[in-house]
Amino acid sequence: MTAPETLGDVTSLDPAVAARLKRDADGLVPAVVQDATTRDVLMVGWMDDEALHRTLTTGRGTYWSRSRQEYWVKGETSGHVQVVRGVRLDCDGDTLLVTVDQTGGACHTGDTTCFDADQLL
Amino acid sequence: MTAPETLGDVTSLDPAVAARLKRDADGLVPAVVQDATTRDVLMVGWMDDEALHRTLTTGRGTYWSRSRQEYWVKGETSGHVQVVRGVRLDCDGDTLLVTVDQTGGACHTGDTTCFDADQLL
Image (tube, rainbow over the protein chains, first blue to last red):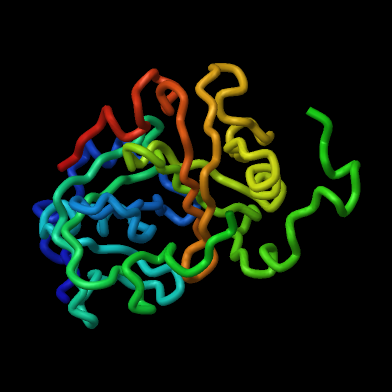
């Protein structure tokens, strides 16, 4: 994927949104991903300004991989894509809620959600 | 509240759970809180081992405040308590999903959820 940064201001996150984001020390905010239909909490990804910008403008759930240090579009390799239905910022600007139409399982293990396997209570 | 640390091993997080937790540099994991009935995503709090231990053993949503650097029990001052119905750990051990019966609004603003006010998409 061509780095949108090379395309100039057209692809940068809306400054009015950027001004409301409160990022952690790595410039990231957690993004809770919820299935728009089943309302299952599917996963939590991480976004920087650019990942949020891409999510808002492409309509595909796009995250920053903290382990691989690169952007990833959910489903790009698995086919388990997320069509974004809505994005909301929380009251203190440090967490996103992304509602999606999820194709296939959201978890890389094949599970429907990343929270299916390990019940503590 | 008396610090449970003073009570010894009885109050420490189950080592089998602690071994599966992957904490950030501050020893914290995000906890997504979902209403067990409406399935709304209510808020995201942060937990260290002790907050998780207290949540699991008291049945009340208990978090670590990054701004105040102290534990807080949701609803302790507002009355908007969370009775914990379930706690799950995600596939890579770095995020919790807490399902609750929420009394009153979950957000300190009075809103039902912390994601009600700011819709980006």
